[in-house]
Amino acid sequence: MKVSNLAKALNTTADTVRYYTKIGLLHPQKSQLNGYMFYNAQQQQRLSFILTARHLGFSVKDITNIFHETDNNHTGCKLVRDIIKQRLVEVEQQFLDAQALMNLMKQAIGEWDHLPDKTPTSQSICHLMDTFSAMQSQIPPTKSLTETLSSTKANLAETEHNGEMHENK
Amino acid sequence: MKVSNLAKALNTTADTVRYYTKIGLLHPQKSQLNGYMFYNAQQQQRLSFILTARHLGFSVKDITNIFHETDNNHTGCKLVRDIIKQRLVEVEQQFLDAQALMNLMKQAIGEWDHLPDKTPTSQSICHLMDTFSAMQSQIPPTKSLTETLSSTKANLAETEHNGEMHENK
DNA sequence: CATAAACCTAAGTGTAACACCTAGGTCAAC
DNA sequence: GTTGACCTAGGTGTTACACTTAGGTTTATG
Ligand SMILES: [Zn+2]
Ligand SMILES: [Zn+2]
Ligand SMILES: [Zn+2]
Ligand SMILES: [Zn+2]
Image (cartoon, rainbow over all chains, first blue to last red; front, side, top):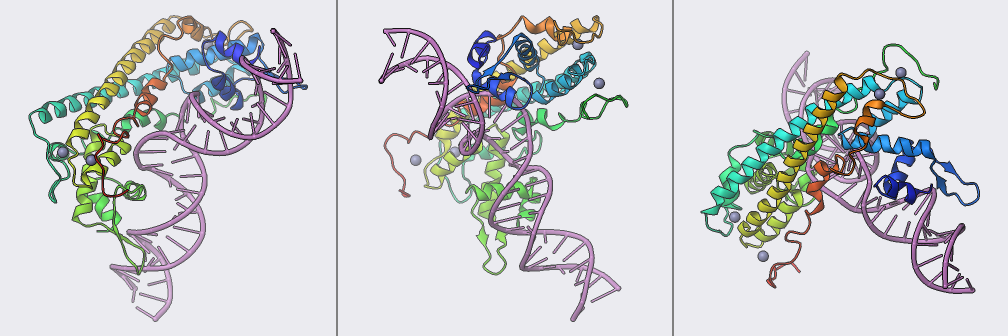
């Protein structure tokens, strides 16, 4: 199977397949004649795993770590269980952050609704914003939504598991 | 005021102040002697606006567009109202995405709880993942959470408002 | 006054996970 | 043989900063 075939088969894009290949998650066979990449059933299985894991909120790095186990014929279950629990904590936080921001925005829209437009003065850039300028540092900007995930990500499993070793050193 | 002073005064970081300065949102005075940047009350007011807007879910680009108005002594209210409504739609989607993902993850954890660990075989990398491999393409991976915002962002106000012009051409 | 701690600058790098674009080679069909 | 569909590697863009580097400055202290 060539990239586009595989991509269509698993409902993703050729670029995504190439990306996973580039970062070493997929290992296609490379034709010596034309350089084309070919993916067999095993690689399709890997891609399927990746997509399912991403779908469940795993990061690409998580998946790399899991493959590091399974490629050495170790069970990946332990990691899978640990990771999803950690990611759940993060998604719950995103959920709460989104909810809080949502409510704040609705409140703003409501309060602004009965206020007129105004031209900026030396005292105020926009009196609408001014309405909310006092309540700072309650919720860290919007970043919590996009960054909460990436922050604590690396730590889960980058610590080599209890003394056991893998073939590839 | 020097960077760190301003940053502390408004409960942010010096790096953040430098960032906003670099991209042209803040216009400090630069000392000819030592190159130090100095921020007066007006600039502090600008920073305050920025932080409040970010806090309410506005993007930096949104803020740039708003300043493009207010710096020309036009009202920013219109844009402010339009933008927050659009951002609210996006945050609501993030909220729903997070909720859906949250439930899916909880479901996974629940189902996996009474399943044993297994070593990978040629048929399956991880039978836990297999449990969820069928239900694809219901929710686009995790990306919706991080990318939903950035996707439709640029369009609001990059279209020059009905024929009116600003001084700086 | 010498020197160290604290502060400043610009410029570069890293972050997550791809999407998109470029330039150029390949393959199938008509 | 030529067009259109497909492939490659490599580079860029996305968001909003945090962090690091290398080096100059200011302030406090002995
Ligand atoms: Zn192991
Ligand atoms: Zn497993
Ligand atoms: Zn205008
Ligand atoms: Zn206004």
